[in-house]
Length: 205
Length: 176
Image (cartoon, each protein chain N blue to C red):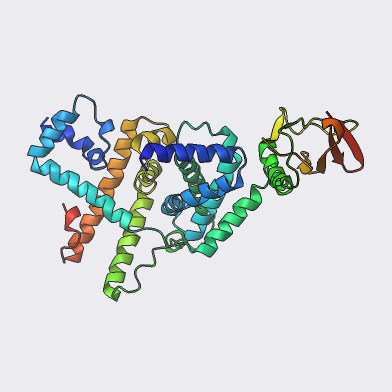
């Protein structure tokens, strides 16, 4: 099946969903939940928060289907909602953290991948270290860079679609993604050098 | 400015296959440069590798039961009674209608229900426009449930001579 027929299929599915077809709603959910979850998790860090964002975003998307003009794909539209909801969650969490005595709660609460249980402990520790550093580097990026990079790398969105979501020129998206990746590369290069074992040579300076 | 400096801003986009970002005057020139410049080609490879490493570290998996909970919550909060929208209200009505449609198969119908106040009923209209609840080529309605904007249930049944009878609690109104 080529990409155009996939798109037609998706357009027909969205149209059925607009008409209130419950099966179409379910199919849309199952088709897009994973990418929505991945984007949400990158942006909010905690699994339960990410699932809340996914749930809320689908509810908003289905309730607003009549306003969906179909100019972009359903996924682009959904991920736009996801990224906005994630911003709200981060904002409210920051507000809570500012009145909390537990200053480290934000960082400590980030859920990291479980890792491969079959891997040896050293390997698991290295992966956990890598995951933690990736998460921290992402958290330290300016919000617009983080959103652009996550929508691209995790959401699989084209630069042009991200430009539409962020309402900026495509060149601005290019810069945001470039600087986000540049920062990640610096971090990975530091990690590779500190490992001393030559791992991740492909990202070294 | 050297060629390398000139093309540097685009290298990450090239690594992403986003040639559309490159000004139309440059792609051919850039491709030729990348083929001959080992430093720029290596830079493209490194930028691509960064994304590969990043993507390899995904979120914790979600099991089927948890996804089931998420869907159940979505389904519950998007049920017709939770959404003040005529088309979505029709969603539930369609399901109930479909359950009874097998009872009768006769004439072709095109049912357009104006959800404006019926007869003596004083409640405001649910929809500003007619709502097509169902179309079918060879079925007829025996009974269908619908709701007004307050969630008050009504039952629509087929009367004689094509008259639809709308039953609301404590009243009966007809619309031809």
